[in-house]
Length: 330
Image (cartoon, rainbow, N blue to C red):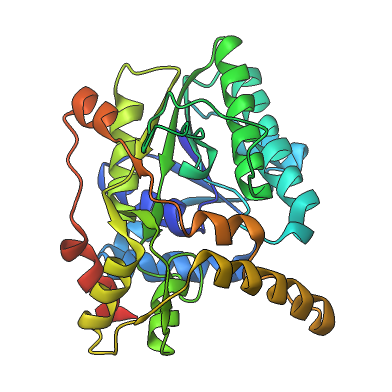
Protein backbone atom coordinates (compact mmCIF):
# COMPACT_ATOMS: atom_id res chain seq x y z
CA UNK A 1 0.00 0.00 0.00
CA UNK A 2 1.12 3.57 -0.76
CA UNK A 3 1.05 6.50 1.68
CA UNK A 4 0.80 10.08 0.41
CA UNK A 5 1.58 12.91 2.82
CA UNK A 6 0.36 16.38 1.89
CA UNK A 7 -2.46 14.65 0.01
CA UNK A 8 -4.71 17.71 0.05
CA UNK A 9 -2.12 19.98 -1.59
CA UNK A 10 -1.52 20.68 -5.27
CA UNK A 11 0.98 17.90 -5.96
CA UNK A 12 -0.53 15.43 -3.50
CA UNK A 13 -4.08 15.70 -4.83
CA UNK A 14 -3.08 15.31 -8.49
CA UNK A 15 -0.79 12.44 -7.45
CA UNK A 16 -3.77 10.64 -5.88
CA UNK A 17 -5.58 10.76 -9.23
CA UNK A 18 -2.57 9.27 -11.02
CA UNK A 19 -2.03 6.50 -8.47
CA UNK A 20 -5.67 5.44 -8.41
CA UNK A 21 -5.80 5.44 -12.21
CA UNK A 22 -2.96 2.91 -11.97
CA UNK A 23 -5.11 0.80 -9.60
CA UNK A 24 -2.83 1.38 -6.62
CA UNK A 25 -4.12 1.06 -3.07
CA UNK A 26 -3.56 4.41 -1.39
CA UNK A 27 -3.66 5.94 2.08
CA UNK A 28 -3.90 9.74 2.13
CA UNK A 29 -2.81 11.79 5.12
CA UNK A 30 -5.00 14.81 5.91
CA UNK A 31 -5.33 17.35 8.70
CA UNK A 32 -8.68 19.02 7.97
CA UNK A 33 -11.92 17.54 6.59
CA UNK A 34 -12.69 20.71 4.62
CA UNK A 35 -9.49 20.23 2.60
CA UNK A 36 -10.78 16.89 1.35
CA UNK A 37 -13.44 18.70 -0.70
CA UNK A 38 -10.67 20.39 -2.70
CA UNK A 39 -9.31 16.96 -3.58
CA UNK A 40 -12.76 15.86 -4.72
CA UNK A 41 -12.79 18.83 -7.11
CA UNK A 42 -9.45 17.72 -8.55
CA UNK A 43 -10.88 14.26 -9.28
CA UNK A 44 -13.91 15.89 -10.93
CA UNK A 45 -11.59 18.03 -13.06
CA UNK A 46 -9.88 14.86 -14.29
CA UNK A 47 -13.29 13.14 -14.79
CA UNK A 48 -12.37 10.52 -12.18
CA UNK A 49 -14.98 11.14 -9.48
CA UNK A 50 -15.63 7.42 -8.98
CA UNK A 51 -11.98 6.83 -8.06
CA UNK A 52 -12.17 9.39 -5.26
CA UNK A 53 -14.19 6.95 -3.16
CA UNK A 54 -11.29 4.47 -3.19
CA UNK A 55 -8.99 6.72 -1.15
CA UNK A 56 -8.21 5.53 2.38
CA UNK A 57 -8.15 8.79 4.34
CA UNK A 58 -6.11 8.89 7.54
CA UNK A 59 -6.14 11.93 9.81
CA UNK A 60 -2.67 12.86 10.92
CA UNK A 61 0.21 15.30 10.82
CA UNK A 62 3.86 14.80 9.94
CA UNK A 63 4.80 16.74 13.08
CA UNK A 64 2.72 14.38 15.25
CA UNK A 65 4.58 11.07 15.49
CA UNK A 66 1.77 8.95 17.07
CA UNK A 67 -0.65 9.83 14.23
CA UNK A 68 2.11 9.23 11.69
CA UNK A 69 2.83 5.77 13.10
CA UNK A 70 -0.84 4.82 12.66
CA UNK A 71 -0.74 6.01 9.05
CA UNK A 72 2.39 3.94 8.32
CA UNK A 73 0.80 0.60 9.15
CA UNK A 74 1.01 -1.80 6.16
CA UNK A 75 2.76 0.80 3.96
CA UNK A 76 5.36 -0.24 1.37
CA UNK A 77 5.94 3.02 -0.54
CA UNK A 78 5.72 6.67 0.53
CA UNK A 79 5.29 9.89 -1.42
CA UNK A 80 6.20 12.77 0.88
CA UNK A 81 4.47 15.86 -0.53
CA UNK A 82 3.68 17.66 2.73
CA UNK A 83 5.50 20.96 3.28
CA UNK A 84 4.98 24.55 4.27
CA UNK A 85 5.61 27.08 1.51
CA UNK A 86 6.27 30.58 2.81
CA UNK A 87 8.81 33.28 2.04
CA UNK A 88 7.92 35.35 5.09
CA UNK A 89 10.85 35.41 7.56
CA UNK A 90 8.36 35.46 10.45
CA UNK A 91 7.43 31.86 9.57
CA UNK A 92 10.97 30.55 10.11
CA UNK A 93 10.15 28.44 13.18
CA UNK A 94 7.12 26.85 11.55
CA UNK A 95 9.08 26.21 8.34
CA UNK A 96 11.76 24.37 10.31
CA UNK A 97 9.22 22.37 12.28
CA UNK A 98 7.22 21.21 9.27
CA UNK A 99 9.82 20.98 6.53
CA UNK A 100 12.82 19.66 8.46
CA UNK A 101 11.44 17.99 11.61
CA UNK A 102 8.36 16.72 9.76
CA UNK A 103 10.53 15.17 7.05
CA UNK A 104 12.79 13.61 9.70
CA UNK A 105 9.69 12.02 11.24
CA UNK A 106 8.61 10.63 7.86
CA UNK A 107 12.10 9.24 7.20
CA UNK A 108 12.28 7.64 10.64
CA UNK A 109 8.89 6.00 10.17
CA UNK A 110 9.98 4.73 6.75
CA UNK A 111 12.95 3.04 8.43
CA UNK A 112 10.98 1.75 11.43
CA UNK A 113 8.19 0.31 9.26
CA UNK A 114 10.56 -1.17 6.63
CA UNK A 115 9.21 0.95 3.78
CA UNK A 116 10.67 -0.13 0.43
CA UNK A 117 11.04 3.32 -1.17
CA UNK A 118 10.44 7.01 -0.43
CA UNK A 119 9.84 9.80 -2.96
CA UNK A 120 10.43 13.24 -1.46
CA UNK A 121 9.09 16.41 -3.09
CA UNK A 122 11.70 19.12 -2.68
CA UNK A 123 12.15 22.31 -4.74
CA UNK A 124 14.56 24.01 -7.13
CA UNK A 125 15.06 26.38 -4.18
CA UNK A 126 17.06 23.59 -2.51
CA UNK A 127 19.48 23.22 -5.42
CA UNK A 128 22.94 24.77 -5.27
CA UNK A 129 24.33 28.18 -6.14
CA UNK A 130 26.08 28.61 -9.50
CA UNK A 131 29.56 30.10 -9.46
CA UNK A 132 30.23 33.44 -11.13
CA UNK A 133 31.09 31.92 -14.52
CA UNK A 134 28.15 29.46 -14.43
CA UNK A 135 24.68 30.16 -15.87
CA UNK A 136 23.04 26.75 -15.38
CA UNK A 137 22.04 24.91 -12.21
CA UNK A 138 22.17 21.11 -12.13
CA UNK A 139 21.54 18.52 -9.43
CA UNK A 140 25.27 18.58 -8.72
CA UNK A 141 25.59 22.35 -8.26
CA UNK A 142 27.06 22.89 -4.80
CA UNK A 143 24.97 24.52 -2.08
CA UNK A 144 26.76 27.56 -0.64
CA UNK A 145 25.59 28.38 2.92
CA UNK A 146 27.26 31.80 2.63
CA UNK A 147 24.89 32.87 -0.14
CA UNK A 148 21.56 34.61 0.51
CA UNK A 149 18.80 32.00 0.85
CA UNK A 150 15.18 32.28 1.92
CA UNK A 151 14.14 30.39 5.05
CA UNK A 152 12.00 28.24 2.77
CA UNK A 153 15.03 27.26 0.66
CA UNK A 154 17.11 26.54 3.77
CA UNK A 155 14.43 24.27 5.23
CA UNK A 156 13.87 22.40 1.96
CA UNK A 157 17.63 21.82 1.75
CA UNK A 158 17.56 20.65 5.38
CA UNK A 159 14.70 18.28 4.51
CA UNK A 160 16.81 16.77 1.73
CA UNK A 161 19.61 16.17 4.21
CA UNK A 162 17.15 14.15 6.33
CA UNK A 163 16.15 12.11 3.28
CA UNK A 164 19.80 11.39 2.40
CA UNK A 165 20.38 10.42 6.04
CA UNK A 166 17.64 7.83 5.60
CA UNK A 167 19.34 6.64 2.43
CA UNK A 168 22.59 6.14 4.35
CA UNK A 169 20.62 4.02 6.81
CA UNK A 170 19.43 1.73 4.01
CA UNK A 171 16.23 3.40 2.81
CA UNK A 172 15.71 3.63 -0.96
CA UNK A 173 14.95 7.25 -1.86
CA UNK A 174 14.41 9.57 -4.81
CA UNK A 175 14.01 13.34 -4.65
CA UNK A 176 12.28 15.60 -7.16
CA UNK A 177 13.10 19.32 -7.32
CA UNK A 178 10.24 21.00 -9.20
CA UNK A 179 10.24 24.57 -10.43
CA UNK A 180 7.15 26.80 -10.12
CA UNK A 181 4.29 24.33 -10.46
CA UNK A 182 1.19 25.23 -12.46
CA UNK A 183 -1.92 23.15 -11.91
CA UNK A 184 -5.66 23.29 -11.50
CA UNK A 185 -7.54 23.56 -8.22
CA UNK A 186 -5.80 25.89 -5.79
CA UNK A 187 -6.80 29.51 -6.44
CA UNK A 188 -4.80 32.36 -4.90
CA UNK A 189 -2.03 29.98 -3.86
CA UNK A 190 1.35 29.15 -5.36
CA UNK A 191 1.59 29.87 -9.08
CA UNK A 192 -1.99 31.15 -9.20
CA UNK A 193 -0.72 34.28 -7.44
CA UNK A 194 1.12 35.11 -10.68
CA UNK A 195 -2.07 34.68 -12.71
CA UNK A 196 -4.12 36.76 -10.29
CA UNK A 197 -1.49 39.53 -10.35
CA UNK A 198 -1.82 39.77 -14.13
CA UNK A 199 -5.61 39.85 -13.80
CA UNK A 200 -5.30 42.76 -11.38
CA UNK A 201 -3.34 44.75 -13.93
CA UNK A 202 0.28 44.01 -13.08
CA UNK A 203 2.43 46.71 -14.68
CA UNK A 204 5.94 45.66 -13.63
CA UNK A 205 8.27 42.87 -14.67
CA UNK A 206 11.88 41.94 -13.96
CA UNK A 207 14.49 40.68 -16.41
CA UNK A 208 14.99 37.43 -14.52
CA UNK A 209 14.21 33.86 -15.56
CA UNK A 210 11.79 31.40 -14.03
CA UNK A 211 11.61 27.60 -14.22
CA UNK A 212 8.04 26.39 -14.69
CA UNK A 213 6.42 22.95 -14.89
CA UNK A 214 2.96 21.39 -15.00
CA UNK A 215 1.73 19.48 -11.97
CA UNK A 216 1.02 16.54 -14.29
CA UNK A 217 4.71 16.37 -15.23
CA UNK A 218 5.74 16.53 -11.57
CA UNK A 219 3.42 13.65 -10.72
CA UNK A 220 4.51 11.63 -13.75
CA UNK A 221 8.18 12.05 -12.85
CA UNK A 222 7.48 10.90 -9.29
CA UNK A 223 5.61 7.74 -10.22
CA UNK A 224 8.16 6.80 -12.89
CA UNK A 225 11.06 7.29 -10.49
CA UNK A 226 9.35 5.16 -7.84
CA UNK A 227 8.88 2.33 -10.35
CA UNK A 228 12.48 2.59 -11.55
CA UNK A 229 15.62 1.19 -9.95
CA UNK A 230 16.91 4.73 -9.40
CA UNK A 231 18.00 5.23 -5.82
CA UNK A 232 19.73 7.92 -3.78
CA UNK A 233 19.35 10.57 -6.49
CA UNK A 234 17.59 13.88 -6.97
CA UNK A 235 16.15 15.31 -10.17
CA UNK A 236 15.41 18.82 -11.43
CA UNK A 237 11.82 18.93 -12.69
CA UNK A 238 11.49 22.01 -14.89
CA UNK A 239 9.48 21.87 -18.08
CA UNK A 240 10.67 25.20 -19.40
CA UNK A 241 13.16 27.92 -18.52
CA UNK A 242 11.45 31.16 -19.50
CA UNK A 243 11.97 34.84 -18.85
CA UNK A 244 9.55 36.36 -16.36
CA UNK A 245 8.51 38.87 -19.03
CA UNK A 246 7.72 36.13 -21.55
CA UNK A 247 5.63 34.23 -18.99
CA UNK A 248 3.67 37.33 -17.97
CA UNK A 249 3.15 38.26 -21.63
CA UNK A 250 1.84 34.76 -22.42
CA UNK A 251 -0.65 34.89 -19.53
CA UNK A 252 -1.73 38.41 -20.54
CA UNK A 253 -2.28 37.38 -24.16
CA UNK A 254 -4.35 34.34 -23.19
CA UNK A 255 -6.52 36.45 -20.90
CA UNK A 256 -6.73 39.34 -23.39
CA UNK A 257 -5.20 41.73 -20.90
CA UNK A 258 -2.57 44.45 -21.12
CA UNK A 259 0.99 43.18 -20.84
CA UNK A 260 3.29 44.44 -18.06
CA UNK A 261 5.39 47.20 -19.63
CA UNK A 262 7.55 48.71 -16.88
CA UNK A 263 10.85 47.05 -16.03
CA UNK A 264 11.42 46.73 -12.29
CA UNK A 265 15.15 47.28 -11.97
CA UNK A 266 17.30 45.96 -9.12
CA UNK A 267 17.23 49.27 -7.28
CA UNK A 268 13.45 49.43 -7.62
CA UNK A 269 12.93 45.97 -6.12
CA UNK A 270 15.52 46.81 -3.46
CA UNK A 271 13.35 49.72 -2.35
CA UNK A 272 10.17 47.67 -2.76
CA UNK A 273 11.18 44.86 -0.38
CA UNK A 274 12.18 47.40 2.26
CA UNK A 275 8.85 49.19 1.88
CA UNK A 276 7.05 45.85 2.10
CA UNK A 277 8.89 45.12 5.36
CA UNK A 278 7.81 48.46 6.80
CA UNK A 279 4.18 48.12 5.69
CA UNK A 280 3.97 44.56 7.05
CA UNK A 281 5.08 45.86 10.45
CA UNK A 282 2.62 48.75 10.45
CA UNK A 283 -0.48 46.81 9.33
CA UNK A 284 0.59 43.42 10.75
CA UNK A 285 0.33 41.42 7.53
CA UNK A 286 2.41 38.73 5.86
CA UNK A 287 5.37 39.78 3.74
CA UNK A 288 4.73 39.86 -0.01
CA UNK A 289 8.28 40.67 -1.06
CA UNK A 290 11.49 39.90 0.82
CA UNK A 291 15.16 40.53 0.16
CA UNK A 292 15.69 36.97 -1.06
CA UNK A 293 12.65 36.92 -3.39
CA UNK A 294 13.55 40.36 -4.75
CA UNK A 295 17.09 39.18 -5.47
CA UNK A 296 15.99 35.91 -7.09
CA UNK A 297 13.54 37.77 -9.37
CA UNK A 298 16.56 39.14 -11.26
CA UNK A 299 18.36 35.80 -11.59
CA UNK A 300 19.02 34.74 -15.18
CA UNK A 301 20.25 31.24 -14.37
CA UNK A 302 18.50 28.25 -15.92
CA UNK A 303 17.88 24.69 -14.73
CA UNK A 304 19.30 21.66 -16.50
CA UNK A 305 16.85 18.73 -16.68
CA UNK A 306 18.95 16.45 -18.87
CA UNK A 307 19.42 13.96 -16.01
CA UNK A 308 15.79 12.82 -15.82
CA UNK A 309 15.34 13.22 -19.58
CA UNK A 310 18.20 10.79 -20.25
CA UNK A 311 17.65 8.32 -17.40
CA UNK A 312 13.88 7.94 -17.86
CA UNK A 313 13.53 9.12 -21.46
CA UNK A 314 11.30 11.78 -19.91
CA UNK A 315 9.64 14.54 -21.95
CA UNK A 316 8.04 17.67 -20.53
CA UNK A 317 4.91 19.46 -21.66
CA UNK A 318 5.29 22.94 -23.08
CA UNK A 319 3.39 25.74 -21.38
CA UNK A 320 1.00 26.04 -24.33
CA UNK A 321 -0.39 22.56 -23.63
CA UNK A 322 -1.28 23.09 -19.97
CA UNK A 323 -1.32 26.80 -19.13
CA UNK A 324 -4.13 27.54 -21.56
CA UNK A 325 -6.38 25.04 -19.77
CA UNK A 326 -5.50 26.45 -16.35
CA UNK A 327 -6.09 30.02 -17.51
CA UNK A 328 -9.50 29.07 -18.89
CA UNK A 329 -10.44 27.73 -15.45
CA UNK A 330 -8.96 30.61 -13.42
